[in-house]
Image 1 (spheres, one colour):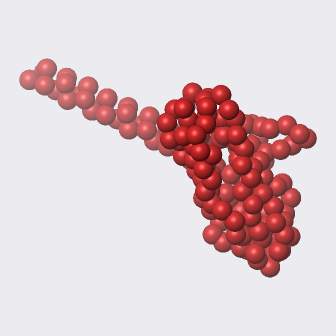
Image 2 (cartoon, rainbow, N blue to C red; image 1 turned 180 degrees about the horizontal axis):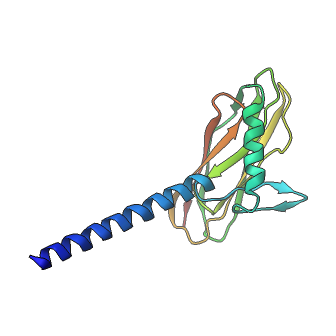
Length: 169
């Protein structure tokens, strides 16, 4: 009888531990924007990870406070084709502010640390065009890779998905 209670207690503790770890990871994941990669051009440098979380919050708050607008990407998916593992590639996703108010990109969320974005830091005027550059480093990857990028802005909808794809050999 004591052995059954002991096993039940251990199983309960193990289950709760796994649950708590899962919750902690989900919270970290949601606060870091996917893989935790936020990058922006600042004085010619590229920053990765949550180096400037305050900047991310400030930009998101600014976007939320701005008048809504609309944006249109000329393409939402790009296929690099077949790539060797040691070839870093870039693609510019062009978009247009199709609304009546300035468009402000708050941040981008990526699904993998192998993907880095650069986007305009200043508002984009109505009817103006700009681009988000996506850099993909296939090192350590193999097979078909699809990476999603979520663009957050003051546009409606507030989050838009773009994606890249490559077959890494």
